[in-house]
Image 1 (spheres, one colour):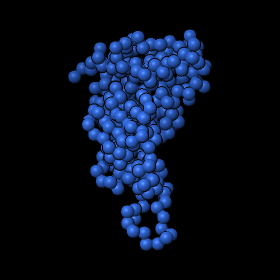
Image 2 (tube, helix red, strand yellow):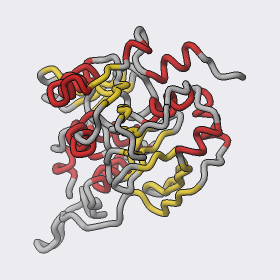
Image 3 (cartoon, rainbow, N blue to C red):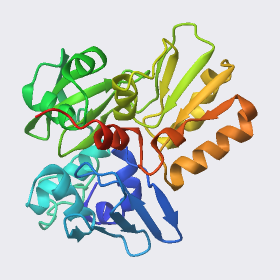
Image 4 (cartoon, helix red, strand yellow):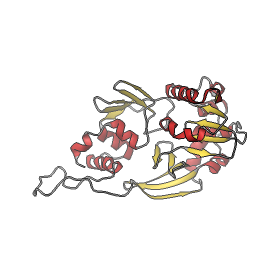
Length: 292
């Protein structure tokens, strides 16, 4: 994979590879929840025609290379290029940009291991991560029960994050600054034989549901992205009642409409509980602020 090949990668495809899908799309304009930080309203904009991005929360923007730099913490152009190539399973040859001395020398993609290396998953003990969740209203006792601590190396840098396991064996990863997915991306389902399933977009809302004491021992399903909705159908088909705790935004309303069309009166829209808030976690934070 050479530099020109990388330059031609659509930013929205690159973001999708990292587990980020647009919350809102209109023509050439896509809006995302920022992949670089936690936020509740989408302020990360991509113009698909021009191939540029702008994060209105930080004022940063640019092309796919500057986005790779933002995500990897690198200012070096070649390091950014390698980060992008690694996401696609290849590396940038060292001779890119230099004169080719032999015809047989090609800028070809070379296989390398997954961009996530030395992955270690275990009990959630890190005070930094527990402090992050506490700031979002999630106490340690619930966080430790439902989440794990995931440590890994990503292109030479070491990271640690709150991990929430999905059915494919991957993890949704969260820190105060990053929102990633350890592949594969998939839904999360805990079933105990209940006839009712509680449906959430993300696991932070699920944890908020646990904190609020709404759980009645029923099953739950976390989409981990509304783009995975169809993957949930084989499981949701088996429930007599589906309680939906979806975001109060365009993506949440579209998802609810699809569910109503498929399941009719088996759908129970629970968003009235947190009317005026974007999601269940915002309601929790606004009404039950964590003790300092």
